[in-house]
Image 1 (cartoon, rainbow, N blue to C red):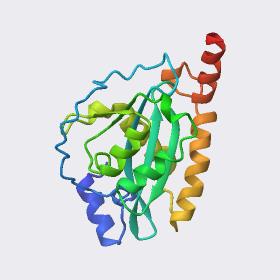
Image 2: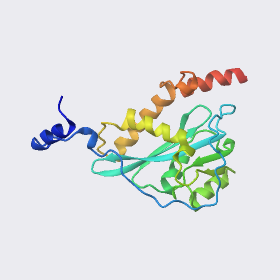
Image 3: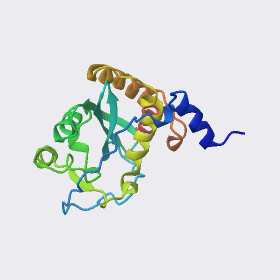
Image 4: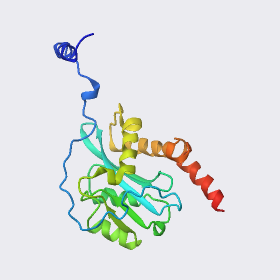
Length: 211
């Protein structure tokens, strides 16, 4: 059996590059938002009693042509459904606001909006949007991804199932394919935490019981 060092030397000699070493996500270090907003969610991810009460969000990086773009998602903790999604060139409040505007559910029903401490989530634009619908904000503790574990897990799935080995030539292509993926994620993909139902199937089953 050849050692990893020998394999690496042979690959270098022949100009070969492992696909696993090709950057798919941008290494990025943000200054932490020092807002005094507390972690109101406090890892209470089991919110399966009422639809769209607690929503979590996050962003991730995607390579489009020769530059980085960003995907923002809003996930309903009730059934892990992606209720809002968008993609853009900049990682900023405008992308988060744009994602918020894609939500078709009644925004006044959302009681808590939880994210990490990225500056794109805590600023005047987002404060005003949340205030309009009287949505309380919750921020993870500084440097603690476990406080936003559902959003992190959702992005891990997307990186594996949607982004990995994909090549996006334009933002328009990314948006179109993201639309298709989110529809599949919500309507067809089964989730272990939902008793192996899709988010939409889970919602329909549980709404029947309520009625």
